[in-house]
Amino acid sequence: MPTPTVRRLQLGNELRHAREAVGHTVEDAAVVIERTSSTISRLEHGQTGIRQRDLADLLRSYGAGVALIEQLAELARNNSQRGRWSGYRRAYPGWFRMFVDMEEDATSLLHFGSEVVPGLLQTEDYIRTLLSTGLANTPDDRVENAVQARLLRQAVLTKQGAPRAGFVLSESALRRVVGDARILRDQLAHLAEIALLPNVQLQVLPFDAPSFGVALFGFTLVRIPAPGSAGPLDFVYLEDYIDARYHDDKADVEAYTALWHRVQAAALGPVESRALVLEVAGSVT
Image (cartoon, helix red, strand yellow):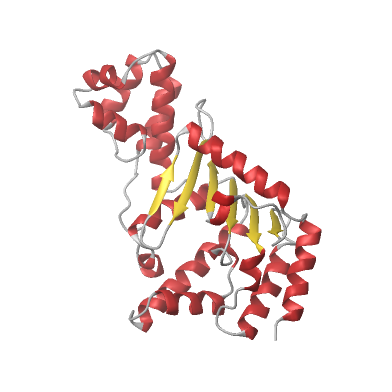
């Protein structure tokens, strides 16, 4: 079953699709259930829940049949986040938790990284070194919880029904020493192993590839399946040091998808990329 976050996103996507199919505005929808238009907007963006009675009334106003009403009613049930962020998962900052849920239910993850190896591909020592440096003056137990939380995330690549995952890494991510030479060598050997997974495509953008200017930062494209007729959910995830942004606007997604294809085309092929990873690993002293 999808995570509560993803169920709310799927429900919102289906409701927006149903509303637009009959030409209703968010103001029209708000009148039906005696709510504000901003409430409808939050609902359609997966930011709030809805009572079952209001959901049924809204869908009937859109001309939905019994089957769709029952399907979306099931999506709307049990969408509480209570208890989901206990144990090691408490280490995830609030702004990152939505991405963790989306990642868990994604069918496609496409990531470009420029400076460091992305979290899903990191070894334990690499993670610990990064977090110990990045979380300066943080108690050791909190750092360790963050390490274990990141390791737990990595199961998404090897679980049953794992997503199709594409990674394009700048050559600088391979050569940047994190910790010491041993940690880097182990990390590169790990990358070479992950590159052999059937659902993973790993590519390297070499230093002599054409410059892409705006692709000097990382981004992730996430696709989540939809249970109805609205089509999949597509997001662009952008992260900085203390926050993240989630873009689902069609134009934004299309722009980053085009950028992904340009970066991927400029990168080395998967076989040549794995060879370069091993070559760099062999040169680390």
